[in-house]
Length: 332
Ligand code: SF4
Image 1 (cartoon, rainbow, N blue to C red):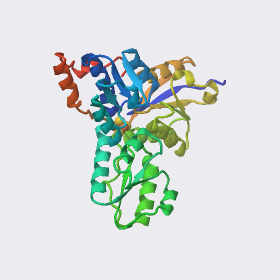
Image 2: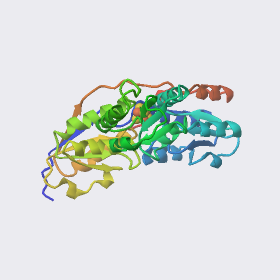
Image 3: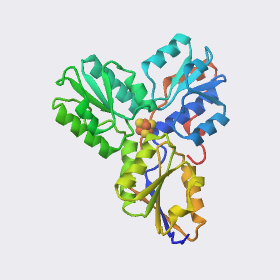
Image 4: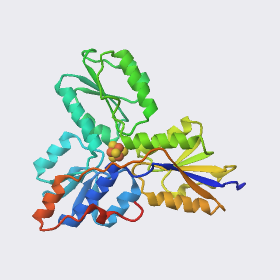
């Protein structure tokens, strides 16, 4: 390889969002105050490193509730669940701690409201994503899913004057705008949230990658293949003309990607721990004298409160809930 690499440019913000921080805190605090075992339904966030670390600390990850024994404690993931799952947990007498991100819950509440008011709801999102499955479950008879603007033409609704739209929280800002514009053209009376439901963290990370893409020769996005927001970051870079790769961690970096590259950009999805960014920087530094700087497009100071169940469980077990700062791990 011709080694020209001289600079690493880090996207800011990158990595953990407030919903992911909260979800991981919930599992760690539950492990501290709940009698074991503590089950987690689905990946708490879409990142293998996070899941493996929590598994090592004692959390048991399952795909479905039937794998959880009666009377056990189960945590629902940050992506949310459908009411059906909640009811099943209640029927089984499971002790539930809900780590659904409050911004996902907001979309569920909007779905419930529109369904109650008699709207047909068009959800813009990715089929099979945990968040979409959960949201669609709020009003399965009233919701339709689209992923692309060209699907709008085929939509058949009972009353075109009574249509609402909602969006998954982790979509591409630009693609979603096109979907909403297509929906507005087809259903001029359509209603929806003030803008869309794409969360602050998704928007900020995409804005940072857009800025970064104009400044570097190639972008590495660190995140899981099943992480919606990490995939969108890679696409944002490509759409803005800069080759980009989605990698799990530093071990996935191929030296041929760096051929003739002087500046390399790094970002990380909302469920990627910062330690993986640090490791990628260290791996790239093995190519020689490389400086590191950061482009920072916006400051984030969002923090979500913990669910009340945790405090209650701690009391019942005569334990004190440790302060959240006490569970913050190195590298987060
Ligand atoms: S990406 Fe957005 S919606 Fe998802 S957990 Fe983070 S803040 Fe919540």
